[in-house]
Length: 72
Picture (cartoon, one colour):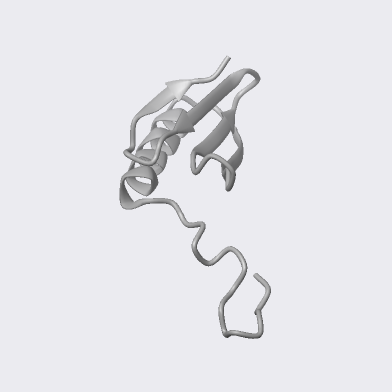
């Protein structure tokens, strides 16, 4: 993060919601229980969705309300 003159931080307001964090943790636990590697977990600042890239072709997005779906 980078500090601005006003004492604010760039990226400080771009954190996942509680629902997203809980769902992300749950899905990551399920994926690793199946011995699937997780390559990327990222909050898309443009859409506000959490993105998980796992295995060779599993792409999952988590909305701000915690609902998740496979991306194609």
